[in-house]
Length: 102
Image 1: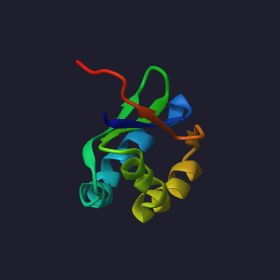
Image 2: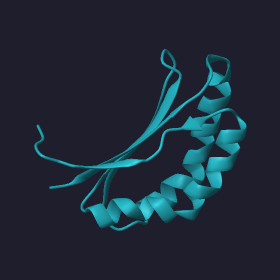
Image 3: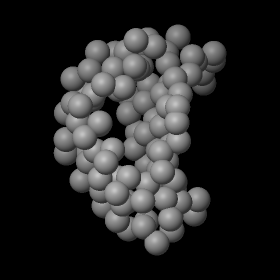
Image 4: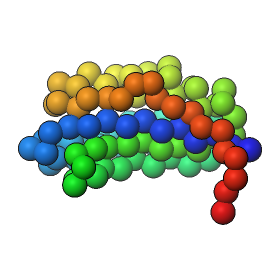
């Protein structure tokens, strides 16, 4: 079965508009790079205003495919600007074996 990769981060409520804009702008560089990776089945980036959180959730054919994200340079390059804007990334990023699906 597939692997679901979940990356979560939190930020202060006052930073919502800034973080949302940064996430929107990140799509321009991230989308082509992620599409080019082997085994990507889906990728979602989102933000939760109420809980001051952002996420990247992706679905991969294998664990090795999911782990490509650990070294994707465009993703790594985006980390420091988000941290500078007050984002606190939860670590480790988790890769979940899918046990069942609907």
